[in-house]
Image 1 (tube, helix red, strand yellow):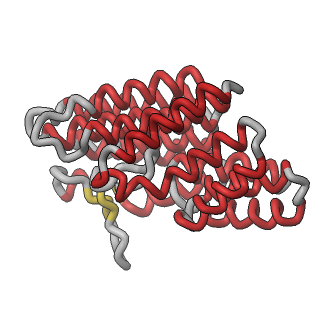
Image 2 (cartoon, rainbow, N blue to C red; image 1 turned 45 degrees about the horizontal axis):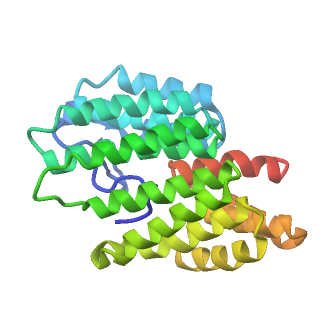
Length: 290
């Protein structure tokens, strides 16, 4: 289990071996598989902000497959494509298509289906908060928690995880809205969720300094932001978003060279097709004059 905003593990597997020719979507026949080459090409074009070409490729893939899970895979990629553009509304539109697919799987795989619904809502929310669409972000974070908590017993993802994720999100939203007191209340609630479930906290603890640092950054406590985001980066070295937050802290402190160097590092490590990479590629282009 990873970040409160992570891309869901196990939802779709990509065949990445040399000579691979297909994206493997469980339940689809070989004839229904989406070509890996075009999908990867489209994702690369998103990273370079060439959205007209990337979306034409996604559409061509959709036109060639009939398998529902395969289509959901492409719809999720389209949601992230709009994330790279900072388009909250379109990201939600396509994530809702993925949620609709997982609703069809509730009877056959109930634990996973409800979890994936919550994950997709949170993924859209992450795009929205990073695009400053704070009200929509809150709506989708709350929706994600509601959907995830519908998972029946025996649960594979505890209620404490969804509580932690929601408090984590609400703290960041409050900080972005300039409400430091409310942000700290949610930080305390997130801390309590971790302290109340040692098993859940084992995987999630390393994202707590990111939360504290994020709130400190957006509420003007730069010393705390630097200290906590330094811890966050040490525990999550390959996360471009956390590196970018630390760079922003340096910039606000007047440490121009350190900020520029870390911005460039964050931009280069943003090679995924997910919300952290979408933010880094979009916003750091501006910072680096690209």
